[in-house]
Length: 405
Ligand code: ADP
Image (cartoon, rainbow, N blue to C red; front, side):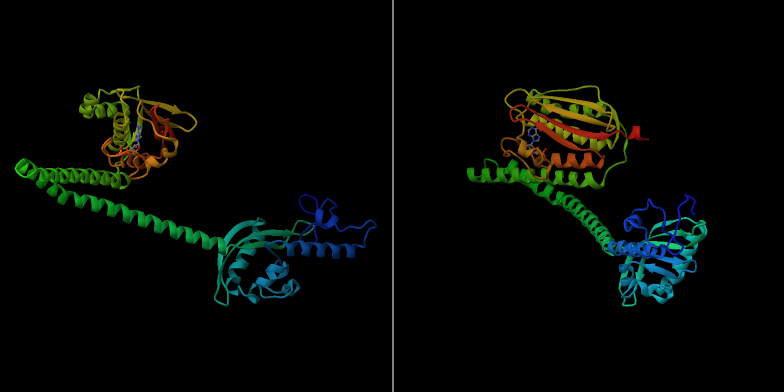
């Protein structure tokens, strides 16, 4: 008897005459079979079940000799019939190089009288192929509850391991190429700044010195060139800011958002005066953030709120709410501007995506991409809700890190 009082077949350690056991009662006939017949039928049923499942199953005696196995396990061992494994041990089988280790495992399971579940190992077969398997072993008991061997199951997880390895390699490759790309964007935009500054300042010199001294066409050409160089400079500055947002961040420290928005409004003073904008904000929280980067996000959103205005004076309002479930602050920058059609709500966060021509609304199309990068570096999200003609609300979240600590 086992601790639970059920009877077990000594060779298998599986229930024999416990009538609640499903596989065995299934083969009982109306008139009682002789005990030997019944045992035979049970064994046959057990073997059938084991042969039908993808898991390999085997069972061994106390000295790690095989007492039986499922058909797939026999096939792994190079045997045509499961019966051929009886009496063999791991030294007789293709995985003999691991036989000592298997014996140690078997002994441990038997002496601890405890299962050993889901351990993974790789096996080198004599044909040179290597396979990964995941194994579990449990102790087998006789009627008195004494340990008489072990039963094990294993499955071939080589394909899964290969996929995991491929995924790991692809991720490492992706990370490396992202790093390369960022370094390239940084170096290119940084190093381009100097020659461009030179082109731009000489063009401005030309414009100052020769405007009205040459003919009308020449004046126009110089004007175009100055304009192009200025635009390129702005583009390169934004590209550099984009590259920096991913890699050159400062550590997160407590940042009082009231202070950074107030500072932004001060530096935007000329734009606010020129457009007659009214920018207001509620009491804002202190969050753990990279102060310089967070100020950039507020600044981009406030400038856009003023820039994409209708013929009404622009109104921009900044507020923040705490989401108690997500434990994050949700900031909202609302404007009364031209709004954005639904199909562009996602696309505007991609690089260089602009919905209007430069003459009407100047810009590089990088501001929102930088903002998204910064917000995601902080573990948050950014999105817009807007109806054309009815203004926009840009939302972004910053996790409450102080809460988490
Ligand atoms: P930029 O402002 O330099 O064009 P952004 O990346 O900041 O680049 O914005 C991308 C595009 O999203 C803008 O060109 C504009 O079409 C749209 N957009 C951004 N903010 C607003 C807003 N507040 N109202 C309407 N459209 C906006």
